Amino acid sequence: MKKLYTLGLTLAAVLIPLASATSAQAGPTICIPANSKAVFNVRFSAAWENGIKLINKNNGRIIRTFNNYYRRGAGGEWNQGAGAYQTGIFARRTCVNVVGMHKRSGPNGSVPWRTSRSRVWRSNPPQIGFEDAGDNDFNDASVTARFIRRPTTAMGFRGKMFCAPGGTRLTFHARFSALYENAIRIIDRRTGRILHSYNNYFGRGAGGEWNQGQGSWRYVTRGNSQCFTIDGLHKSSKPNGNNPWKRSRFRSGGNRIGFEDAGDNDFNDASLSITARR
Image 1 (cartoon, rainbow, N blue to C red):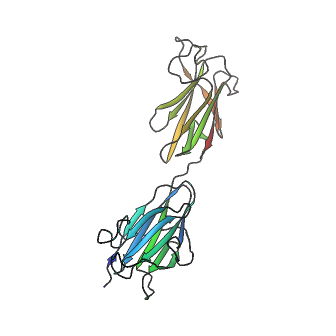
Image 2: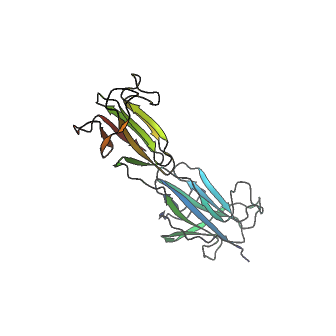
Image 3: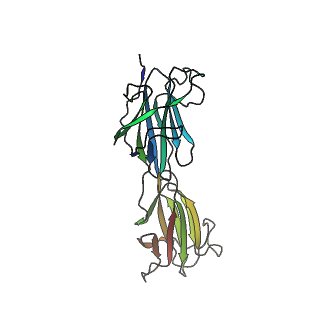
């Protein structure tokens, strides 16, 4: 009697069907889109020992292995039994060979592994079945998958806010064209923490809370996405501890924000531009 090991998940993926597996590196291929992770679900319904290997087609590395006799006599090279496995996020499109194999017995070191024939039952959501004998039900082992896409954030200013996906390499470049003291602060919108600051009188009379004068600062965004508030400040004078800071009016668009410290409305007294690289 065949034993059934199952985890009931409804899954979806993009699948490129190939010919049935003919070697340990061949098999149907599932391609994971860029900036996504995959959840693979494996089921077994077989008395004979069956195994599934997920192999990164780009570099030949094994991602995960499954065996219906995991911890019940299978060898030590297997990672788990039936069930789900979630990968990490792949920055680039990555294709995975789904390789099925079986023995014509239960776990037995003297019995050789054979490559299982495969069938793509459906493409969306995909379901791949493997056959270990001759009844052609292709359900002795099966694999489905779904993708979880990392949230994408449109980059560009919305008012004083700028957002970027996690892992984006940002370069903040500040410029000043003002006689009065001007400053720019880059603030993490979630925590309110000041990440970096600029002052046009840095090293020439400005207070000690500023990080640099005009120029560039590089930063890699964290999490799934990260947003910043760009704050502009000025005094109606050169550095003077008796004069209060005032919030500068701003104008933003694209990847640039400009600040105004007086009334000429050129919004060029202080400015910050941002370039991004993934």
